[in-house]
Length: 167
Ligand code: HEM
Image (cartoon, rainbow, N blue to C red; front, top):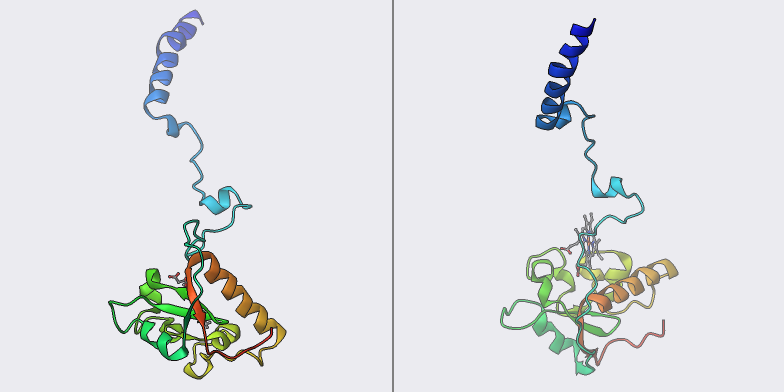
């Protein structure tokens, strides 16, 4: 009986400790790999859209006609790219990959395409400044876009000859 106890104390216990130190996971449960969202369900998923910026310049109120605005549609790489919403002109040059020629949202470059933004439409005929006939839901979409751009892009001016709409 004593010899078995001695065998356990002298051989098995130190061997187990050494083995445990060498391969700790063989003795533990397999760790569960979680994504950050699973680890903290309250944490919002990271958006793929650009984050709001803290370094925006003070808004400018330079005036541009609709005709002048066309120069800033990205077709001349030496010029910035502008997008206007409800008459406010934003410099979106940092997002050439999105607003540049042939890119997903180039339809909004060099113009005020408020109506299209409100309607969530990428059709050329909708990318116009007159948003007067949008319903309340589409007006909210348009105003949300205005807020989205205001937090991310510098305001370089206003469209001088756009439609005057009081909503
Ligand atoms: C299946 C439909 C659509 C998909 C999968 C989609 C996808 C996306 C993605 C991935 C972005 C982020 C782009 C980036 O920051 O690089 C984005 C941004 C945007 N989307 Fe869409 N979109 C869709 C439809 C539309 C439509 C119909 C409109 C029309 C108003 C629209 C307007 C915009 C605008 C203005 C941005 C903001 C780009 C920025 O300045 O950061 N999208 N969309």
